[in-house]
Length: 252
Image: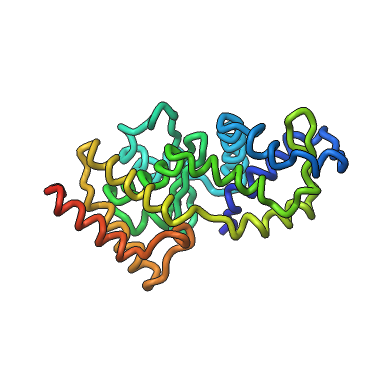
């Protein structure tokens, strides 16, 4: 099994490869680097970088072909959901046993075989709803910007007419250490849960699938939170919250 790199590590690595001709000018680094990261890098640019990064990830990981049963199943699940808030969505399955899923700023959604093996179709859709909630809420954009702005590797990035300079392999390694500790806030995770709930309800799907998906994640992890939910509130508490809301609203 190939190791799945952190999404934003890949994004930043791709920035480096795409801008390989840019020259690092140390004299420009310290002045205005925060402004460069927070203002110059727009949401549209983050989305475009994410798109190219996902291409790189797809090339390095086992993607289920169109003829694969997992791909056919996922396509059935999401057949009605090809755009969200004006963002076109594209879906693929990674044939790895990890219990994982993610969505990126450009609308790419990747679901891992391990997750599909323990979830029914409604639960998979609920998890996808959570992940695309991060995209719609701009959490994915903000996380990338924050990582760039706050990285300790400021001396590895240069301002050159509003673009990012080339990063060396060692510098990328240091940045990877920083990115490994980056995460969404608990409030962002709760907001993404709420997005999924509303998404399911709006589309006539079972909101309780969100609760049962959390319960299955808790069971699959032996009470431990899966890696991709490591910053989320407790799975049991999340399930209880969904069930309480559904009962109050009289929906299932």
